[in-house]
Length: 623
Image (cartoon, rainbow, N blue to C red; front, side, top):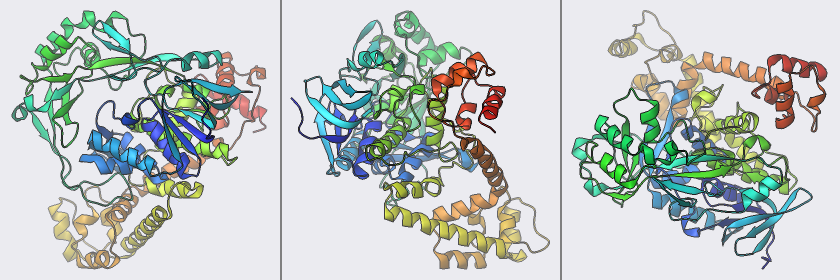
């Protein structure tokens, strides 16, 4: 059978990457087909029911600023919101939301169905149709041939997935869902290199069997904000999470099962996530620690099912249950299902361009865990960029690429295609050179105009940004020009244990102090009147304060960005014969030939390429 409809973009996989890819391409005007094994599991949160966190929260805000949907969907399904790292500087502030799993899935399904140019097909893709190294379509397990101008593979953990639980293992891409066979073999035959990775999930628990009085309550923020810059509706009710810990007794029981653990017995060959290890890994790697923190997280507001964050494991079920019942508050706990590990195929991302199009096959894009990443947020970001670029290339438009100074999304993709990864890649703030510029609060300032320019961000979103920018600029101008009355300000400074004034200064000078905020001074009449008259949004006030407090540091980072941009502007032509540059080290030539960097800046970040190699390259290019 051949589907009569011909598509501009075919998205394979209905996870976080697939959803963002399909939505972005459709919003831009492409005719899109979303193929997934099960239409009932679109946008399923396979692991923890949460979005955001350190650096991940910044990514969701960037997706939202560009016109993507993850922030809006998260806000619609949030049951608890927390801004992490508020005790640190604003570069480290990271939003995180606990979500209702079912509402999250429902909202994504509704958002996709609202796009009339998205069609859906329930099946498994087993083969790609390729002619002259250009993608032409797909063939499904049921023998259906579907033609498309570009294909985005968002296969998650399904490619040759094997689920491990104690000594047992079986083929599967997720609990109770089959793995996808066939694609890996074809891609290898086409010349792609591949590897194996693994990830895991904790047991799900019966919340009725937990004694919460023995645990530590972790409520949401008193004044929660939202992920989306567009969404201002208040949360109706927040639900608490709870904290407990493992112990020596728990560790002793878990160690009994190590001989049956697929990880320790060698049955899993794939590399696991170093920054989100299994409980077995934690016990082994941090042998000096007597306990590890665990988070008791609700799966939704109308369910008793609990996710035990921090207890990822693939040990036998009986060992899991015995160990759980030694944890404070879980003495009588019941399991809904045991934790398990899953091993799956991935393709080293050095085989991709910055657009996430493959170098070997034109108009074929890889996103998410197929690229060796881990996390909903990283997958969604890649899906968004691939969806945009699949539309752009199909319609002969300019590629959409974010740089390392534009966004965490730019850092993520540049890291993947330039350095590759041999373990599941997770985003951290430390991976970004310019994290003070890439804050969660200014994602709209950085990206909304870019999203609007290509047609993804709406007119309404752009207006909201320009209003905020205008408010911020006016407020800073007022604070720079208005002097403060000593009688009004000194009692505030004394109360905040800050040095009192002996002469008049501008408001900006006081706000520059570490522990003094605009809110602290907002009861001073002249400032109170101005804020009331201007009706400044909380976002504009926060932005103005950050600009004032960290202006010097921000200017230094902007200068560094300009310096880096000079290297990024030195282009390297397609098909450049790096192997002929014998003055470059052997390793440098091999890496440059493999990665095929497009700029000197990208070449300088390749592992194995030395500064002297870059100098030779610059001389050869006449620089």
